[in-house]
Length: 369
Ligand SMILES: [Fe+2]
Image 1 (cartoon, rainbow, N blue to C red):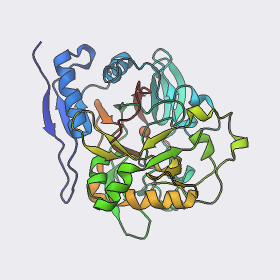
Image 2 (image 1 turned 180 degrees about the vertical axis):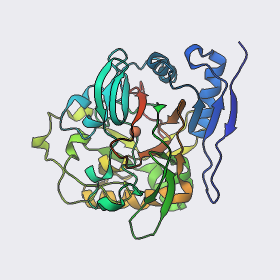
Image 3 (image 1 turned 30 degrees about the horizontal axis):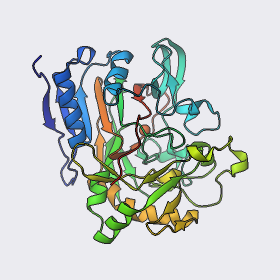
Image 4 (image 1 turned 90 degrees about the horizontal axis):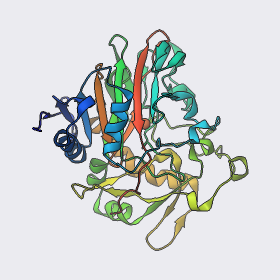
């Protein structure tokens, strides 16, 4: 079959420094040819974020199959069954599609009937449930924050999904909000309601000093066991880029049983399998220790967080953020081993939005530098 996909770079806002992202149109996701998949695959690994202009009624099966094609031997949802744990901070935000359990329904507001789910109330994650300092109620519909910068990953037992797919099924009427960093820099970003924000781990790495590049190439991050339960009482910095250190993390005795072999340790930089480039790829709120080249372990949690924050914060400055302005039928794919992303936005209860998300725990660990 011939290639029908057409690829264009994402339109970049004025003043932006982003060098990633593509738009693909002309593909049929229900009957995707090997040739078109190859175009999507290569575009994803070369440009990190791909927006496929598709239809809101793409089936959950087609979304699952598209996601799995990047990693054919993976079959289970990226968080496995860990979301069942009621204390996990991820638990309230996701509802599983009964006939396609690797696909989750996310969004905001009341939905009568969708994919076999009846009378569900979706809740768009709001920064007030996670950040220590909150934007006052009277400003809540005008201002927003990055909720939490992250990699989609269980970070315990399972390996981080290679790719995540997000489909916009329905959206409320369009409006804009101002995203505030509230970290003393005055940084702000004008965004569409409910944007998903992306930054490139490759750009985050590239702009480091040579000394910092050497540090992140040779150091490893140890993640907390059961991280989303461990961090459930801790509170986020206003940038959504990691947590305050107030000793609120749960003690090991308060967590489910820990199997040491399931604790995850990953390099700070992950190699792109197609381009060979390195991404600074760290999930800032789940970090526990840094293991240095010489065998030294940085144990102090506040110090670990300070080190990672200093390395990552320049990479989320407004000029490095791509904030996707969703349209119904957009299927956005991102290289989960090469970008960080964040939920954004504060919806009113009557602003209903319906999305589907899919990712699969990977069949391999991230590639080392
Ligand atoms: Fe995510």
